[in-house]
Image (cartoon, rainbow, N blue to C red; front, side, top):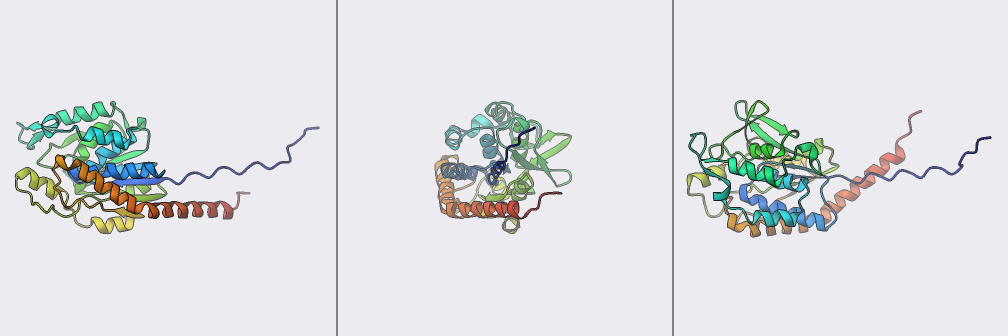
Amino acid sequence: MELTDPRPEPPAEPEPVRIGLALGGGAVRGAAHIGVLNILDKAGLAPAVLTGCSAGAVVGALYAAGMSAPDISALARTLQWKRLVRPSITGRSLFETARLGAFLDKTLGGRDFAELALPFATVACEITTARRVVLDAGPVSSAVLASSAIPGVFPPVERDGMTLVDGSLVDMVPAALARDMGADIVVAVDVSGPLPRRPPRTMVQIMVAVSTLQPGVAEHLARDADLVLTPDVDAYAFWELSRMSEFEQAGEAAALESLPLVQALVQVAEARAEWRRRTTRPAP
């Protein structure tokens, strides 16, 4: 006679709510993303899915590769333009980015997307068709470089048979992409903002500023994200590396203010998941 255990099996543990964090473009203002990540981590609300565009792609890729927000901050403070780019002699752009590409590849450990610690994707623009391209496979460094290739300032990136430039032209803050990747709630961080109070004066400054002025960003985020953070980064310019700490602090302030809302969104998502478990009938 075969004995059976009369005790019912314990219910399966519910899956944790997956927070998706979409980090937008904004040149050096992207340092605010580091501050946002730092606060979310400390609050136990670390993202499970990351997407990024341009500067947001850089920060998102480093975090997805396993770097902590303080580590990314320390790395960012060592950056100098003269070490990362040099004047171009090809006529395709003002600067060449071979050094920047090598720096990214070294910092990311030569990883492919499949080797990242967290799901991550970035976006770029295919320059011959103006098509939005999602990059989520293959080498991470070249994908980040493509997403950050401001036309005229940096050269296009040839990848997967395409000619790719700055993703800010087609998807400044890829919030919908985070949802597509399985995020239960999506928090978007928009650091594009208006032009700085100190207007751009050089050709490079003007081109960098123009790359962030894409219409319809707020409308798209209102539709695609559950919560949009807009750190107060308007006081300083997109190109000011010396303002890295101020940008980070702005991100931290925005994230701290948002914590009750993020926590409420998580609780609502948990309640919805529990309701579905209780009301879904098992298949016969």
